[in-house]
Amino acid sequence: MRHLMSPLDFSVEELDKLLDLANDIEKNPDKYAHACAGKKLATCFYEPSTRTRLSFEAAMLNLGGSVLGFSEAGSSSAAKGESVSDTIRVISCYADICAIRHPKEGAALVASQKSLIPVINAGDGGHQHPTQTLTDLLTIRSLKGRLSDITIGLCGDLKFGRTVHSLINALIRYKNVHFVLISPEELRIPSYIRDDVLRANQVEFEEVERLEDAMTRLDVLYMTRVQRERFFNEEDYIRLKDYYILTKAKMELAKEDMLVLHPLPRVNEISVEVDSDPRAAYFKQAQYGVYVRMALILTLLGIQVD
Image (cartoon, helix red, strand yellow):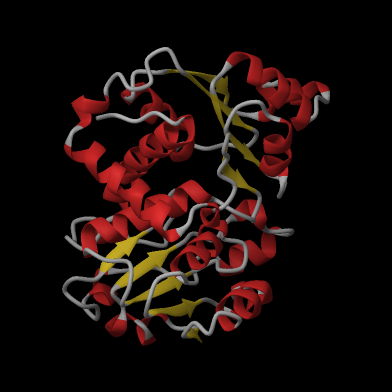
């Protein structure tokens, strides 16, 4: 039995195989429509989610399986004080695979250690969000044709953004990836990413404060929102929430084939006028999230479709 706690749980070869499977699912959905018939996915979401939870549910339903679970801690026995360890033991009696999101870092790992079924980390605090990273990789590879030889700008909340941390950890394994880290001083990338991941692996990166200073060089721009729920006080959030707003004028500085990605939800960091730009790929990205989660469910359940 295998779990997914981090994008690094898969080797590059396994990752390429997973992405190939996701691309085949995109092209041949009917072939996979009954692959998980009789199988059940439990979605245990201790904090709110729209895209991640619904994309997991859509993925399992597309595979012919069924779904059960809860969408907030208050509607589960966690409200009565039940531990994650006990919850997953019970869920293991009801379902074949589980996706768990929890505000505490490491909660998904604890669940995996006690589970009798495969567990997928659907986000644990500010730590990891591996299925979003798989979605990001599939989107870049599908639309750019490669994951190596790219310059990617990561913009916004680089301190608390778990999607950014996971994506950096995944992309450093590919050749000639250059990172441009775009953030205010208060939201710069944590030292454990800067020193223990980027510098330790001799990966090229630079840190800038103005989005305009990076736009002309980027193959991919990955925007993030400033997350209210990660701040300790409202004043800091209000001061920084509008620091970066991607507009049509700023898009005119970019390459004609640059991709704009965003893990969503968007607040106002990307102007709606950008949505009509053919380089805006964030809604396609959400669709790719379903394909990659379908591929992941099949892989962890050991189901092969000829």
